[in-house]
Length: 123
Picture (tube, helix red, strand yellow):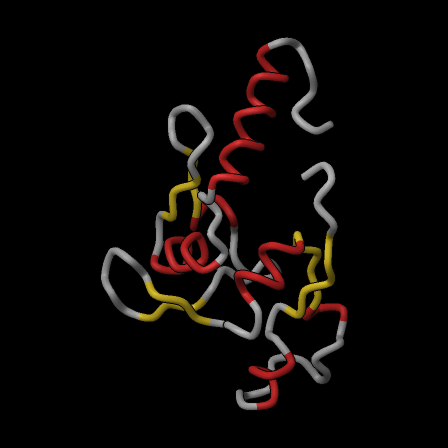
């Protein structure tokens, strides 16, 4: 998102890595890293690897960008403003990261308006 700083996200956070079976040899291994906007990483995810699925009420693993396929877990509303979780992991991730918060929805609306006016999908 334009104007939103990116951070380096530990997919399995260091705190969770210490207390779980080691999925990588080192928490700083490149396979355990992903770019994430500051709001998602610092405010939303923090040290979480699970979140509450609002549909079932059960805990579910968060979306893992290195092993999960986005289209299996997420879909868009008809106006492409609201992100819908299609699986427990998708719904939990959407909730934990607050991916349908006002700022995200406003940014998506601006992108849609720019595209409708002939602009590109990414500024």
